[in-house]
Image (cartoon, rainbow, N blue to C red):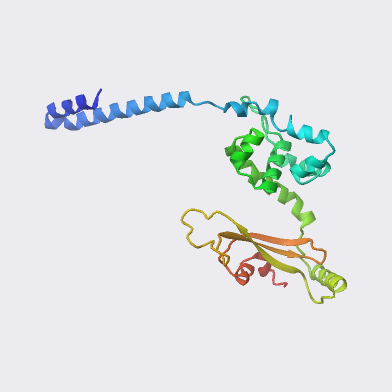
Length: 256
């Protein structure tokens, strides 16, 4: 039913029937829109062609295999860790990050999930760029990277970045500072680092720092051996160092 023909029907209809005529016209318009939308959806594809080839020519089957076949330095440069460390980390997080295959498609292996995440952390590449490298869609990468990061933190933090929780723990750190650096009564070295970001929409000057850039702040506490004891990241760059410290969980410990 054309729009001009619909208008003619509306003009010819008695006033008491105009409501029914309008309803009929609207139903016809909605029907045509649904039919058009259905055609558009039918034209779309389930998976992009270059992504369908992941299990045949993905980086697991090509690039990573080639790097391992060499002296190992190239793999370390690509992942920022050697193969043994990579596998140790993969063993720790595998149960948390791996997914089951479905009837329609095979899941992304835990090794590839970890490799994508490490490559993102090492280079800061965009998810779209990583899609072309790994043949995993950018939308999937945007979900798996935070998930893998959380799994890595959950498994490694208690072992490698345990915050001192007793008076004796803090005294031990103070002794190390005195013995190694001749710096008494120090329970840690603390500082912050601005991480430049692209400000979110409508953020105004919320992330605008004293350097004239938008940033979030990484606050870190280290022991006498330069090992991290505590980190807090995400505070807006506009805030002062003192304000960042007072907003951290470290300040609420009332230890330092």
